Amino acid sequence: MVTGALLVIGSIAGASTLRRDRREAPSITRVSLQDLQPRNDFHLVGVIEPARTIEVKVDSGRGSVVEKKVAAGDQVKAGQALFVYSNPEGSLAIKEAEQTTANRRSAVEQAQRQTNQKWEQYNKVTTQLEETKQKITTAKDEDKEALEDRKNELEIQQSQLLMEAQNSENSIGDATLELERAELELNSVKEQHGSDVVEAGIDGIVKDIDERQMNMSASETAPESPFMTIVDTSRLFLKGTVDEFRRSQLEPGQKVQLKDRNGGSQQWTGQITRVGDMKEPSVVVEEQGANPNLSQFSFEVALDKSETPPSIGTHCFVELIEENQTEIKLPKSFVFYEEDKPFIYVVENHKISKKQVELSEDEMDEAMYLLESELDLDSELVFPTNDVKVGMDVRTNDPTN
Image 1 (cartoon, rainbow, N blue to C red):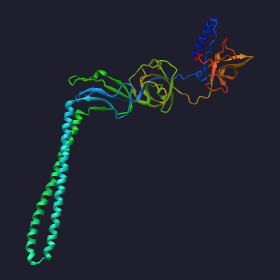
Image 2 (image 1 turned 30 degrees about the horizontal axis):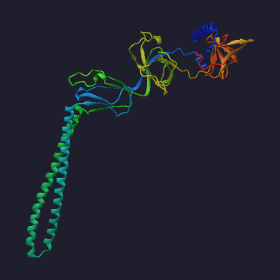
Image 3 (image 1 turned 120 degrees about the vertical axis):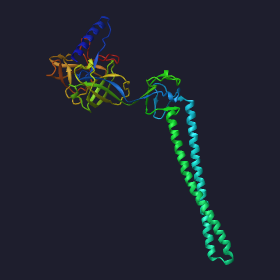
Image 4 (image 1 turned 90 degrees about the vertical axis):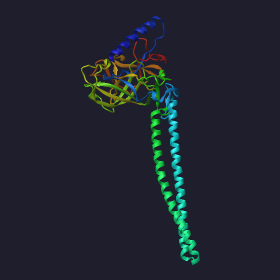
């Protein structure tokens, strides 16, 4: 951090001289007190990954892909159509199986109706038979012969209808069995040929589409690569490895700060969710100072929600956040003395002002002071050069280092 501050100071001095030579107004380089705090030298690296990744491959047995319903970069919901197959033979087989199933279902319904009718007829005849028997007991002798004939006729009808109703009951069972076979066959055909429409299994973003796999004939061999890739970005994670010596310094729940390895001022925060127990294949990462002779262990960070989250695949530096930091440190180069009293330049209301401070020596770093002040860490300081004067305006386009 000190080396960096010295480099900033050198660049400021050189730039100031050049500006004076050009007779231009000096540009003020300012820096926040927070950014002047020494950074933890515990650095790791990792890659941003989504919560889940689903790869959708083309099944040539279901036909060729003839239509896309989404484009790369689209946000999709589970159940939303992704693309459509064209498979005339498969569609015909499914329609035939569906028709057979419908016929078998109708047969079951017909058997149930016929059985109900037989039982209604049987119950009607049984009622008539009971009424005739009752009449015989009270009838006159000359009427009993006709009633006996009627009773015998009804008994024959009852016996016949009972047999027909029971047979009808059996036919329901046979028809139901045939329906079950048809439904199994339909499921088998659908599983073999599938639906013409493929739907998303998760909410997410369509990351990649391999356009080369569109309209491939059944004779062509589909590549192993997926046709579409959908990533679930509802939660982002950073995954990386840590060597065996520094693994003990990580534990779930620790807060961390992430920075893009390719530069830029944007930062993100998160917390460690997992530290692996199993050794990973050794990977030498120079930014970590990794040693190929040390065992590596995986770790994972869950990122906090952000309005501008990092892109999938971004490589980031990872630093632990010191939550209990109470001492405020200040590089000695930012302090100047007047009448043996220490001062610093701060930005207040877009103007430079001079502020007296109380300092003590930092036993851990001879290039730093411990600052005893009510200044907030977001306060902006200005490096004291000959060009800096109290009351100078600080323009919004002045650089910040």
